[in-house]
Length: 235
Image (cartoon, rainbow, N blue to C red; front, side, top):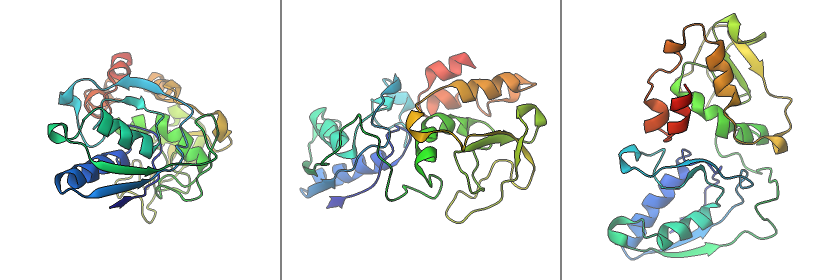
């Protein structure tokens, strides 16, 4: 088996869950797995809580690692084996084809986008912070040409920048604020290399919300989804 997917360095990005499941199958059926390693475009940072409790385990929080884990896909494969996280403590026969001429301090602009919702380097860098809005009705730009580069909602209280989400090929059919004028902020002029994980966008929109009891669709979302216990406590 060969595993070759471009991860983005967040525990809730499900390519690493796919890696784990492929390793499980290879270990179960005595097949060798070759992992073609790739640079982590957010590999210059480690942040957020580690998931400790298995009751929060899900496809978007599979491993007991920091939310922003800083690992390459090959490093994580070796960690899964080393920590014996596979079922019954099994280990897969894994060969990692290592990344050359890159280290965790180097910025890396992806030559191939990981998904239609992450079309450029800025979206990949902002994704770590903006994906926390998945627990709200706030639009992160899905259904526009700038996913994970704009933020808004159908209330002018959130900002003067406007956009109207629709549908885009390859993106999720569920689009917050679809067909309506959204008011918010435009992040497209930011320098990608200077973006790191932050709660400032989430807290800013929360503070601007007139009725704060309606901000989170489910208060447990930030706990049970990416394990963001500290986020939920702040809100």
